[in-house]
Amino acid sequence: MLDLGTLHFSSAVSRGAYLAVFLVLAVRQREARYLWHWIGAILASLLGALVLFNNPIDEQLPVWVSMQLFAFYMASLVLSWSGLRRFYGHNLHWPALLILIVLPSLVCLPRPWLNLSAHTTTLVFFMCAALAAGLVVVEIIRARSERLWSQLVVALAFTGYCASFLLVVLLLQFTSLQVSSKTSYLSMIFDQVTSILVYVGYIAMNGERANLKLRQQADTDPLTGLFNRRGIQRMLKERPCEGAESEPMSVVIGDLDHFKRINDTLGHEGGDVVLRIFTERLKSTLRRDDLAVRWGGEEFLVVLPHTDIEAAEVFAERLRELTETHPFQVCGKSLAITISIGIAEVERPAEHFNKAIQQADKALYRAKREGRNRVCR
Ligand SMILES: Nc1nc2c(ncn2[C@@H]2O[C@H](COP(=O)(O)OP(=O)(O)OP(=O)(O)O)[C@@H](O)[C@H]2O)c(=O)[nH]1
Image (cartoon, rainbow, N blue to C red):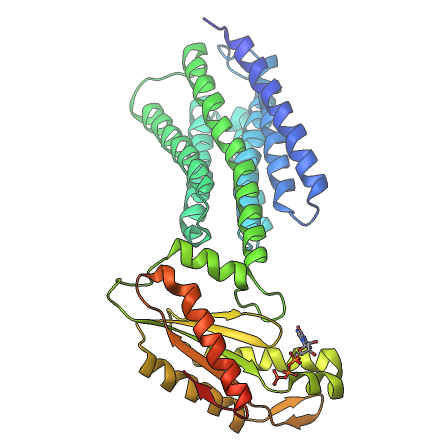
């Protein structure tokens, strides 16, 4: 079996390794300030491990050593929590964080004068530690909209920490449990496993979010924030039917008329403003399940689930009218802009989506040929 000294040593070494990895990440991702909190958390627990390494646990620890230990381990937990708050974009309340870090140490301070036993101060420490670990779990539960699988690993680890700290509180309070080399041995093994889950979990959360962001950027048109072609193809692959196969589905392709003239008179920036204003109008006409896509330069595609060709025509006509009757205010000028629209119903199965787009595209060209500012099917 491993002796306690070896466990403390391996704990310190593994934390040193995590520290190196997190430092590299923090230097490469300067905007990710939460990484510095997690670096602080690892550093604090590394220092705590070194203090334990230097002090035999079977003897009652001197007040000064207990204070250091409690402060380092509380700092590790609290900085984990503050890092997560930053990760999710929440504000920090530094005074509250500091109080939580130093409270167990402060309780140690008057120990010799108030005749407080080490047992009482240890109890306070574990209660504060359970609170801090619980706060981490609450933070992750509150942020479930982030949809990161890796945050579940961190939540699991901190649930384990919180439960084990509460268990120690109960045992200290209601049994004659003494902190000894045997209990320390078990807690060290538990900590070694759980801290791996926490730190690897943090690295995975960081990577998973970066991946999601990249994928979102690749699927989104930066000017309008709508899906681009790639985005809609992926979306349809992931949600192929948009409802039952028996449900109708239609596609609408709209192209702003004479857009080149707008660019020629107002410049490219003016043209961009028109595209943004049109996007807002388009969005205001959509239902929750409808998907809008920037299909090309001044061409927009709308996928309308649960919609037959008649209903799609009503939608398209409304969009055409909204564009025509509300002049666009750009660079202090009021512009009358119109749109030509082609529509088609998607034959089932949904694999015929591309065929429907070709049909809507043909209808759009007919709308252009027949004089623009109209809907064709
Ligand atoms: N401002 C701006 N212009 C764009 C963008 N993408 C494409 N365009 C311009 O859109 C114009 C499209 O011109 P055309 O394809 O000739 O079509 P049009 O002038 O709208 O004429 P019709 O479609 O026939 O009514 C071109 O001048 C492109 O440079 C963009 O992101 N921003």
